[in-house]
Length: 200
Image (cartoon, rainbow, N blue to C red):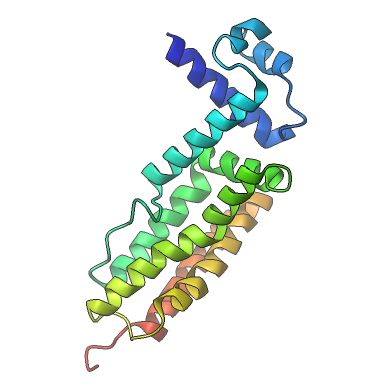
């Protein structure tokens, strides 16, 4: 029961932080949204900062489990079509999963206030994706699926526009379908340019 309450507190905190930011969220309103008094929240978390840090811990674990990370690498695709399918699965997950959407909003809002949020924003929006796809592209080169090139530069070139389109979905949700179509078109173009033809 205590764990259920702790989880409910974190879910409510994620909702409020994503809408109002850290500074705009207070424990009294958070408590009231859960039908608790402030002491009921403080029984599980000693401060708003403790809730914040527990929420960041949960964000990291959830993202790694469902999306992947440099520490939890996706398997290297066995074909160019598999690369496109994997990319689209990752994109569809990240633009439709409510927890991930709220997490991106929180990190975007708080990256200028909180050092840990800044580091996570950099990792999730840029460096983590580049590291994941560096591994993937190096493996695909070893399998003879991609032309030999600098895998890190190739990963940067591949993930940066995709990340930009994901952020567009957050800002303008009505453009999500078009953005996903753009990602797929871009992924297919990338495969056409860098994929290794059989005659190679």
